[in-house]
Image 1: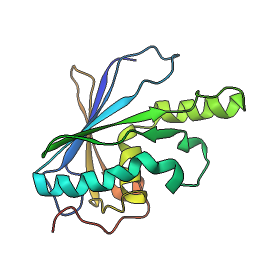
Image 2: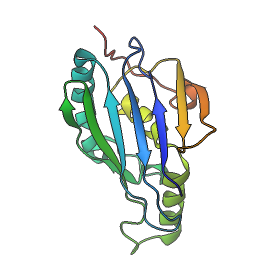
Image 3: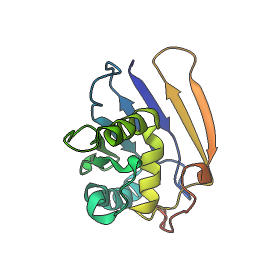
Image 4: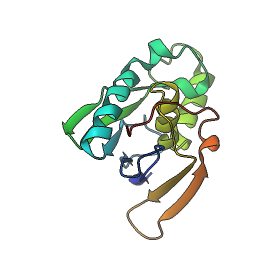
Length: 169
């Protein structure tokens, strides 16, 4: 798998200048998934509010009791680099413990491999952070050479429910 960058320019309701990108490192298709860093950028006030909500991501396993194939992951705690930039990472846990059900571990691995992690991040923004997403969300897939893939999705394709917290006052 070549390096892939997914960019989501303005996914939050009420603010158009907060966005994020996720960078999948290049790796062989049959090796454990590497951590995928997320870089979130925006103006200081919305970023302060966002980082407060993103701190909940590191406690995902204690906040979400679901045990489906799409739950075999965790998030690192966000690190605020400046008042306008923060980073966190997605961590795959599908192949962490192979002493159990290998078929389930395989399903979890495939789920984490093929689902764009931007969707996982946005879903967790709603269910962990309570954040309100925009009704329409643009996604750009960039493999480092043309063509870029531009998608526009309705929020309901990512999360049926929506949060109530806005990043803008």
